[in-house]
Image 1 (tube, helix red, strand yellow):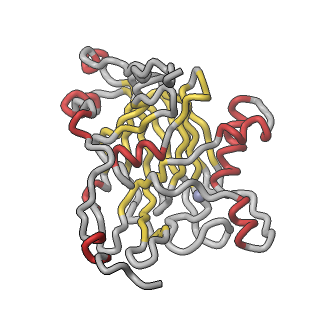
Image 2: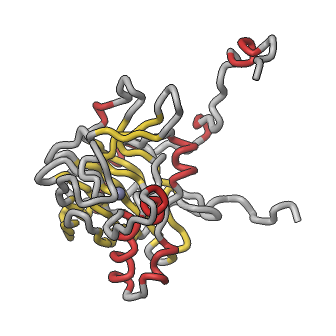
Length: 281
Ligand SMILES: [Zn+2]
């Protein structure tokens, strides 16, 4: 194929940000920072390696995901605790905030609600930035490791502890429903602590060993009543491979905290989208 004569000129057109965020309501980070002072821990859940656990976070509470024992990546699903059809929308979160999230970014819910179901209020890996490979931490570009893609790429190989399966088992157990009832609720994740990007030459999704170390944590504020599920990925730090029992894996700790009521006095829970849903009909 030959390039058109003006190929260079066409390539040199500068990009335009799809979703300029100047009109996006900005979180009051002063308010969110104040919540971290004087919180009371109300619950904790240890997620075993190559497994997942569900946890509940009332609106106005904070949940903290902490690396314990060794570098480990977590795959996070979030639902409206009162309506599982409203769930984390990784694609729109990516469109609004970019490929990776950190302090001050929102975790948006699916249509038609499209509201900030949670807000990242502290990230001890925020120093990482974007490395020379284009990699960064806490991505919303991956999906979740799953046994179907594994079977596709390994000529029918069967592996049962991918994050997709771990999340499915955890939700089925928590809601006391069957695996087949639980599975459709599993959705694209926030890849907590995972370091990923796209190669500059081929545009392929890559991962590299997570910079997370024990004690590092991500604090997330629940804007609505949340049901969460977190899988400790079989990829461990995701520095080599996933979808196998090959690499060393570690648990992840989830802690739930209740802020001091006076620190929440100026917080308002988010309304669902203002769109009237008439769709032009
Ligand atoms: Zn995984």
